[in-house]
Length: 494
Image 1 (cartoon, rainbow, N blue to C red):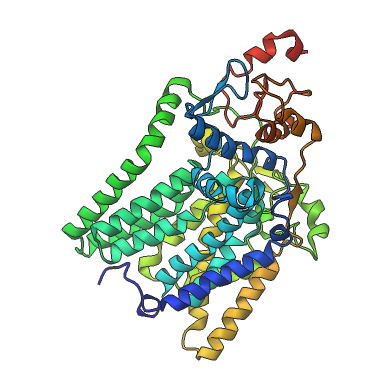
Image 2: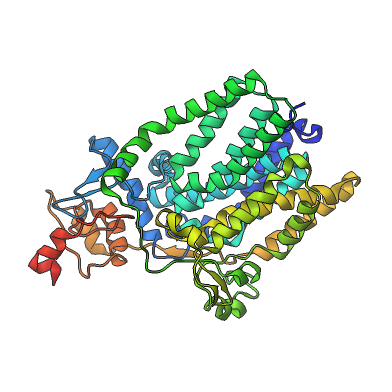
């Protein structure tokens, strides 16, 4: 039997149980994110100025497709010269869902529906993965809740390219199935899951690597050591690699070509959102009971508005799981501290104080990662999986009733610790002027005032209503020449 083979108890879980688990994640998501489900057409998910910018990527994608425009260059912002869009924050999988739903429920509701789907799919994906690894559907359920409702993941709903980590557990799950029984079809499944990660956001490949590289390296090492490597496995892995390149290559090559020519990644960044070590054990400021009490503590952290709390229940279960890992699962003992080190960032902070001023090994990474605190998304996944092993350990030799009660109790405890009530939202509004502007015939540009990278996010959202080009604009990584026209014009430079 392969080292990654399914435990019989989960391998024989009925489709009805899986469907029930999926529906449970739907229901819990709708309750946890209230009042967002009642505000789909009036509010953005999350509370951050960046939410105003996200809709533009969907709008531009639809415009480029319907008008057959070059996707990676636009003159609709930074008019009249335009700007390349190679490194703008596109999330093609979220946009694809938006394109399907927007004609039915409206653009803002479709945007929010994609966010809600991200919660459901991450929870269900971790359920499948943790169930595969532990052999327990109940452990998978608790792990899924711990992963998808972790405070940092909840907060990152303001950035779809970062928030949408739901395809990472599916990639690991597909790899586990390939190692259990290598076939060409399972190789294609791995390729599809890898492509979903890449097309959700290129950062997702970095996040996925923190988990998949230790997992795959450890499993293949054990197979070689025990002389269980087979020609079928080699063929399946080649199919997975070839399929991934075929699915992603067309989207990746233009970016790689532009990167080598223009060097967009910032080598020097004046400020960095690192994770304060104390933040990991400080309850979230989004919590309805003690959120206000801990707000002053968060204000001392280098990333004061990003809750990195991992949860006492999750941490306890993860410690139990870590203590009882089987040999084939020891990769998690490597991936978890790796995720922690990456999340802590370029310096070690404790309660706002710098303990170690410079971690030089981060220098080659920071230009791409930019905000190490984002790696809490991966740390949350690692701890959720370890917590799944802890739950599986607690449920051993229990009666069916005891398993049900323990699973329900642990799930409730995790959700209580992670509660963000009411769920943060931002009210959408469009000044009436832009509705009138949309009725004006002809193509002409708009000069907004004031011009800066933050207010430009509002202007670009309103552009999705009026459709006229903007002299200004905001993209994730603009080339140095992007602002030449603005700086060289007497009106806009004033």
